[in-house]
Length: 106
View 1 (cartoon, one colour):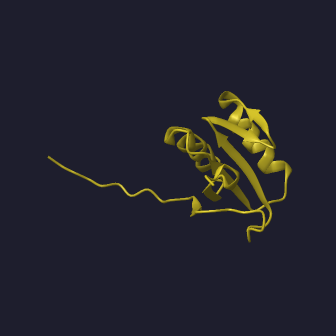
View 2 (tube, one colour):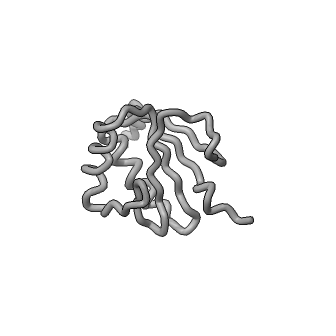
């Protein structure tokens, strides 16, 4: 029996932030929100079936350096992984993940 561990080159550079506030150091970012397993850009819902097309349209039409994905606590991990797979597939490398600062418990 032969066992092999294949190493695949990792193309995506991302960071995980505990909190991203209005005064964040991140510049030239585009924010995508995940709320209740739905994707939102500028408070407009993006259907899962058209998410890849919309993300590419956003990425190509704006001059920014980073996608910021804000996730709420009620969304499933697979929702986050789905968007991550799209970003990786399209070689969008700079991604930051954070909890949505507006959804913090007081």
